[in-house]
Image (cartoon, rainbow, N blue to C red; front, side, top):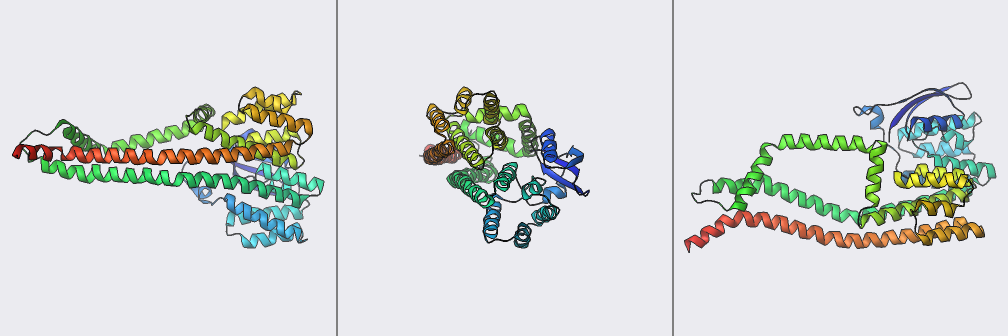
Length: 401
């Protein structure tokens, strides 16, 4: 996500300068203006070098969850918001986050609502979070909104942890296989090639190919690394363009085995987020817009924006999502029943629960399939290299007999 620098004027006349990540300059400008700021300067920062901003430690999802849990306890204890923030500032080890909380506290003292004050620090408080707080402030049920957001965070974190736990062992196997191959190709094969250099007999063709390939890799290793780094740089640049991101996200959704897993994860996240926002009292059109901006897959996000326009034109949510083709018939029918009976939030949560279980099941099956495949490939490659390097010795032993 691109990094932007902005300078804005507050209502009290003070000036605030920040660096934040945003999808686009127009979106960031609109968010700042909706928060009551006068935009004095807004420009995109070039991603050259690390810089001081790149060294700042961002707040993790777990830290933000703890922050909200502590904030909920303090609010329910009857403490004023400013005092709550003072206590939380003392507990956070993140200096940049502490600075942001200080700005939020000062703006609240100046008469701003907490949601509007936090909206000026989008690098720490998402638009979804700020709008949820704003809805809670308007209806007078801020503790309930924060509790609902905490439950939402916990469910998303649980799904992410399941993904990470399932992928840990396969990733370890891949790294182990790579390490073994590096040792074989940089140490073992060259050692054997030096031994075979003194042989008068002609080496088998597979052994010759392996030795020449290893020699080529060692001689041109620096060029190979530079070319790979250049390709990675170009790919990263391309994937950050709109065309590249859409192409990659669409390709991932259509991958065999993995595509259904990724689609299920995003549908689960989308329905859970939409249910949380609607339960907070936010209108449907604004809720769909927020969900579309929170989804990282551009294909699904574009489908949601299309559904938003159809709903804006008077179509039901079920009908609009059905036209996109991104959700199965069962989910569409559940949403349709939820709209008809006034229990849309319940149906959306049920859909999310279903897909969470399905993602977990598919992930376990995929992991159980990947692990033996990686082990088999590792054994074939390593065993093949060893056999090819020992072929001259086997032939020599046969000749002596």
